[in-house]
Image 1 (cartoon, rainbow, N blue to C red):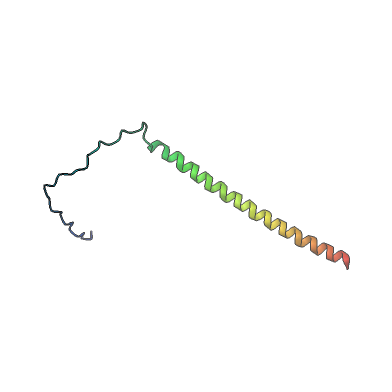
Image 2 (image 1 turned 90 degrees about the vertical axis):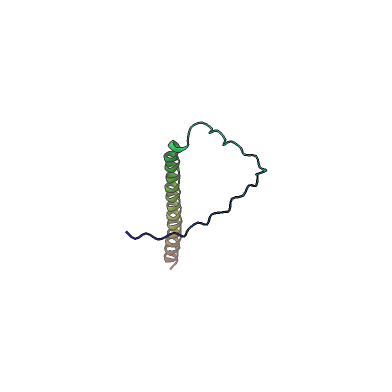
Length: 82
């Protein structure tokens, strides 16, 4: 199929300058790789998001019920005064 043509990467001129920075060996790994834990971490994040959304829905519902109760109480008390 059609592929975009990428620009050529210019090559840097090579020189015989000696680097004054010492080269370090890569650090050894700390033990087990993190790959097996990625699924568990993703599950915890998803569960946290879902629980937060449910908590927000309960809070909005509670505020709505409280406002409705205040309005109904006001209507009932004004009807009794007439």
